[in-house]
Length: 271
Image: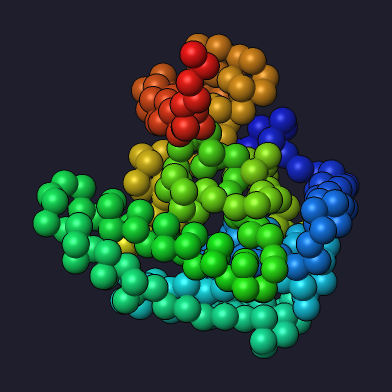
């Protein structure tokens, strides 16, 4: 599907975004009194882009990288791609931590699995929250800020685990749609080609891909949601202009209701 003009990043604009984000990250850390960051690296695109921007801003010696595979589910290719990226960015070996999460997740699941219902999703959420626990614990050890890896598409669709992959101290790419992150990544020369070609996936169970689970592509979601939220178009206008079916638009907007609910949590009493 062709990316419409309002989502396209020219080479000049992409470079300006990279420069602005590097400067903003550097300023945030300086203002916060921290010199180092810590990030969970999955071998996927979003974490790769966040990692690159953070290294550009803080220097490789000041970014701790944590790989947290669940052995048996996490694809070994993703681990290898993450390590390749770290090497390309000249990350010191002492800054690369590999911490399998099997044991801790399994202990929790032993107590919870007797309660039946949505076992696959619940187990995946346990994995995501265990990774959050590891990152925030190590942030205390190394005196770092946790660097997030979420994009706007996932936020708007609610495609994340509350207090899991969503939790962070700073989010470098949360204002960019997934289609824009793909474009931006092409200007980050350290990102391996394998990561650029990989189908988006949270990696919470074998064979999981984001677009298959959602029922639509990120291209479709980004066009619909950006048109409605950024261009202030009506759904029927989106149908005509971008030739996306009303059924697909309804599917995307229904999924986005989950995003609205998650963005409103916790509800704060005003009484």
